[in-house]
Image (cartoon, rainbow, N blue to C red):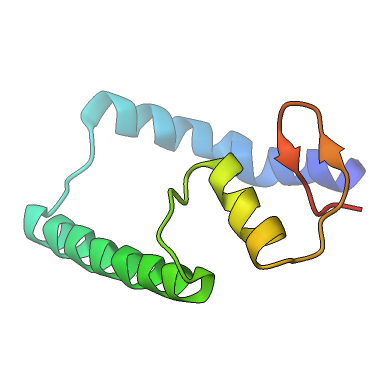
Length: 93
């Protein structure tokens, strides 16, 4: 706990002035770089989705905890922990 307070004092508190200035003045963004990053991240996301679907053997809504749980724990038979009320399966022990 003591270490956390020291970190806050040494790192977080000094940054407050910087963050306030950024809010007041704004930040400069290079639209071309931002567009390239967006393009790269979208491409990577699609690659990962394809890998997930290939491993699962089917397409499903990755953002759906229910569908994800069904694929991971029922179809792929990964070890599941206890069932959490209204949240589906959890693999935490």
